[in-house]
Length: 288
Ligand code: SF4
Image (tube, rainbow, N blue to C red; front, side, top):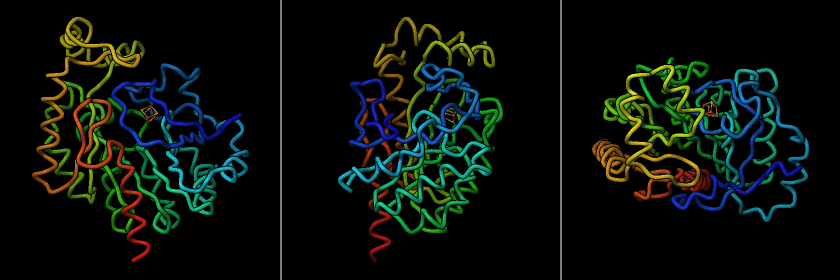
């Protein structure tokens, strides 16, 4: 079994990610985000368990050229609560560090702070997802609070680890009213970049969102299912609505003096669409 796989978000025509290898130390996720995309293609998703075959990572890393970018994780969170005991993600980071590869971590958990000793001394950057300062416990019931995540951004940034904040997804009527506040909060906490994206509907996430926010989702239905587009297996809002939302994020970022990227929106980015350029920022810091 290949533990490292080329990152491929459903072959989306809007994906502008650089070539990278995806690594999931866990299968499934304990964070229970209502809008989660990964739950639609992984069986038993709420049952978070170590990824089968993870012990083969070392031999697969040995076969790489050495200039690859590794992304942890794209179909799970690398820091579920059980990671505190198991330390699987930490072991993976140690192996990647030893191999001298660039590393991008995507998480919603402040457990990442535990690994700051490794991350601050390698070519790494962290993307911390924050979608709401008020509805986090409803949108992401199993994840650490947004306050904990902001503290984690502060801790990482203070230790010299570049941090991008993912304000993703933005769902009209749910969290779009918080755009300015979110950007200000993550910039104040030490993020140097924001990546944003609007909610893309899949059947199971739509059902979960509709159970929790029935009136808002009912009002959004025509925009997604009558006037919107189908791209890469997802239902999108009409492009003019998406781009109006994403423009607001970009403006807020520039007001706060930080960079902006958009993910699978066909909108463009100041630098990378996924924050991967920050792993090079870390290189410059180490070499100085
Ligand atoms: S943290 Fe990511 S993988 Fe886990 S439930 Fe939330 S969106 Fe899905």
